[in-house]
View 1: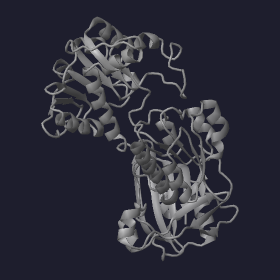
View 2 (view 1 turned 90 degrees about the vertical axis):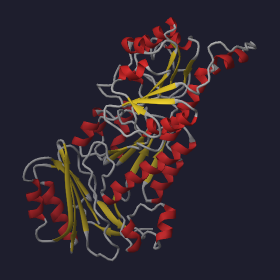
View 3 (view 1 turned 180 degrees about the horizontal axis):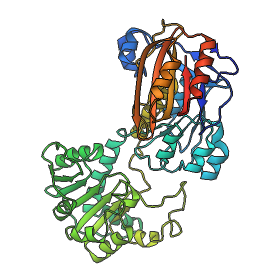
View 4 (view 1 turned 90 degrees about the horizontal axis):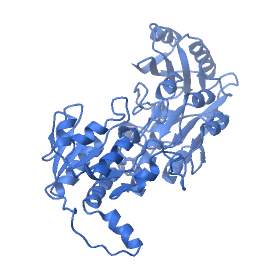
Length: 477
């Protein structure tokens, strides 16, 4: 296990400004080095950099009261649990989401939290999270977290923007074929003992036009799959993007709606996208076309969709996401949750799934690895690369043979004069490397300093903590 370098009781490994209370004293540890061969590094997907495989690096792992404590909710993959436990973290795992009240009551004992889409990290929760250092969203979306409040509290938020893209794209293909052949209706009839062999209103997808709204990681993969089925692909995006294959970008959403047999949505939930598919947009769509939404529930006006389906303007729809979703599995998708739920469920040729776009074994394993590694890189090394609400800052690893080195990780308000103050504090030491960046009101500085004694650690910590712009300062060794 790790060899611990004790820090004096008055010296915490991380210090908080006005947004957090200072936790108890900590120790800092030096863990065993990473694999020594390049082949081993690549095969084991090491968290260390390429150069650290040649020159083994220290793992900088601060441990509050002996170890950092992480909370994982919503059935996050066991692969993620293993990665985090292997790094020496204490992990508490729960299969379900927690309510705001549960989080407020219990989150104060945790240094990091991992969630999926159901758990909401609100301003009230963040105020109660007096030890929280980072948040991991084990999914694509981050709208379940108050990102601005988290940033102001010095808490970077990480997600997994790529890992479930293939799973979502494959689900869309399945939905396109199921809608065009009315498979859900025929299946339901067979379950009721009804034999109804019909071809009216059933179509091949070959030769049909797929309109993709949002040509990002999911949309572009979907584009390639759809063309393999012989479909023509149009896409609309707010920025100009080079298409894959024979796909063609159109200049407006209306143009896409008017020329597509299937319209599929792949956009984030933003003020600009909320309600983007409503009465006017359904009227623009081809009569007898289909809508697919695997993006965010609030981008579609569901009552308007119901009217479009009832009138025959749309021949069917597939919906995987909803404006309000149950917090746990069970008979909870009802009119108390969404007032139109019963009416939507009664419509023909409608596919409804419980937000399972990324729910495959492969996607959850990949998401678990990606986010767990991001959390580890931040907690162990201070790296914020990939954070969605934070300046992205990183430094190369401290080599294992570099003795008496300390890494300063200083989150502060983006104000003039901060770097001058910090550099004055570090002036009596050799600053081996330093990098700083800002994003909005928050800035983040990382610096590696050499020849630092235990007394120096305490002095550096106290002096930086007294600077007016300090939010959170961690010292890793």
